[in-house]
Image (cartoon, rainbow, N blue to C red; front, side, top):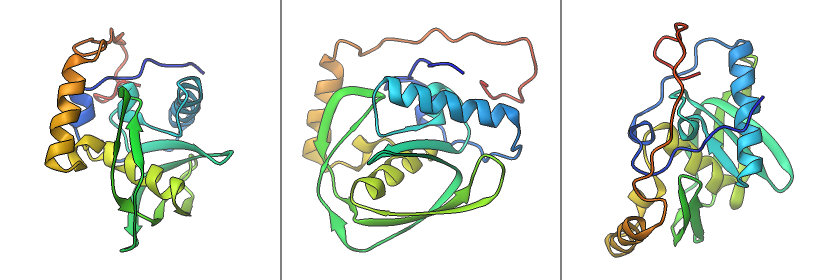
Length: 180
């Protein structure tokens, strides 16, 4: 298991919809452990596989002391909204107010392919929505109102990490196009 580099804004993997997981195998379990270690090292409350360069529909979370993961999630959201600041490990140091659904029901699978239902409100609901957005190639700044988005883009251009790239090792082993 390993802490992996977190991809930053501008990396194309963050804008690419992730592929569904089809193999619930040891590689997936290693990926989930790496995601958890990377998230906790950052530290963060959630991390999606594309944020470490893996274009698969998997995310992990650590909310109120509960650590978990979800594979191939789909969401049902409440109409009731919540206000709150939101940030992202791929946009370090930035945080903006963003409305999200107050409650979320996420359906997916665990690391063994068994069905899982994750229900939550407030921070857990926000986290599940944020991480599922990552799996769809959407960043939280895409959901900001136009004025806030303009401020965010200015802050990104001025950030010390702007334009940095992450060196990625490539393996000679076939991974069906996935950076596992």
